[in-house]
Length: 578
Image 1 (cartoon, rainbow, N blue to C red):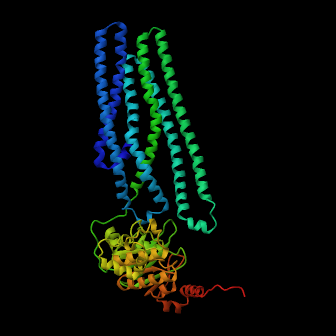
Image 2: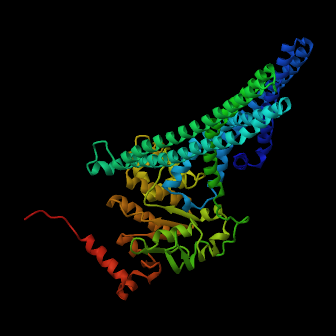
Image 3: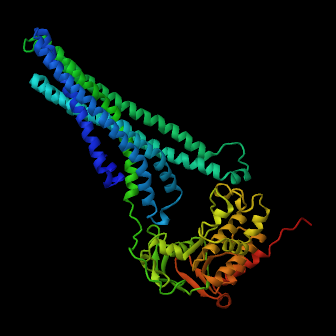
């Protein structure tokens, strides 16, 4: 655990952690030494040798003072390590997350990362401040007492040595059981958290289908499972602690019996036996607490292990120097093979998108349309082939350079809980008021601003809840316009818009196509026909057809079937009974 903690904190914090460990061990050893003086002090007092008793008491006082000093120093250093952990772990995890492929981020990973950044960091910080010291001293102090008992009576000392592995094994067993319960509770809590977020986020859908009673079966099941798992985890913990406690008390009883046997046989005087039994009690007391603290420490270790697992994720390789942009705005796929698992999504895909042209991607669900746009933005690295942006493989671009060339507009738009102005300026923070006004006009945002109570300074709420879906989409388009990137990727940006919002978005796409390379995943016929090039992706991961709208209609293949089905659907209307 210490090794993993140092790894998470970083090598620059290795010195403070080792200093804390040194002082914690010193505190435990000095504690054992101070208590061990009990035997010679007791002997001297019962024998009436008061000068010797005073000398031993003075030595005990010096050891106690040194022990108190070590306790204070290690406590301060422990709190320092805890504060460093709380401060550093967020930075370390955050710095590493920004190096991971964008494709890694999903609902499950975001939820687990959220728990790790909140509960996990507090658990690790608390372990450094409150758990490591009793565990370290609970081992160092009894080890010192064993050495002292060996010095005073080798027979009881050997008995103590034999008891150590028994106590250690049962303490480890208790820690494992507590850890097992924590693992179960963590997984159940993660599922329950996801269900709570799902229940809150999709209230409109639930209510639209009559779920107004306040019950939601997946959430109810998750909470019930969390309760069942919680009871099971508690049973694991209690069982482990009971086994550990019984083993410690059994060893203590055997040691008392052995001491009594030696005293009755005349091999050990009663005074020394009483003093040694007091010393043995001091051996048992801290070591009995090790199992309990070690279980809690192992729970913190689980959190550290989860953090280490994230830090072990390979970052997206990033070259040290930006690549040369040979043909700004141009996109090329050369024999690209890519799959999320063993099944290929794209199988030998090749196409060329000239700069300042518009390409539409059409095809059945699961054919890889979204995957194409994600690979251009390097959400993942491909298995084989080449994806080029600006005439250079995306793997040769730095992340910053690649992102500077691309603006992305998704169907599900996320707005930050900030003002309307700030949400558009996410695309380009240093944009002038003139550029902001022009981008807003082209995207139809100026019409939204005119009817909002605070205009540009209106807060849109978390996720943009104060605005409609179409209004959020317009703001997303304005972001892309104000960024002015040579490449714009639109993923079904007009799929669920009403006619008014669709008109604004279509106008914006047309303007983007004049200044940027546009790749659009589209189902609207007006968007498809405006494209300079149409790529029809097949369900087998290949490009089935390519060409202009007119040429593809003449071929009479899949595109014409797509066109006819969309055109026929567009002519549907609802009529009353006659």
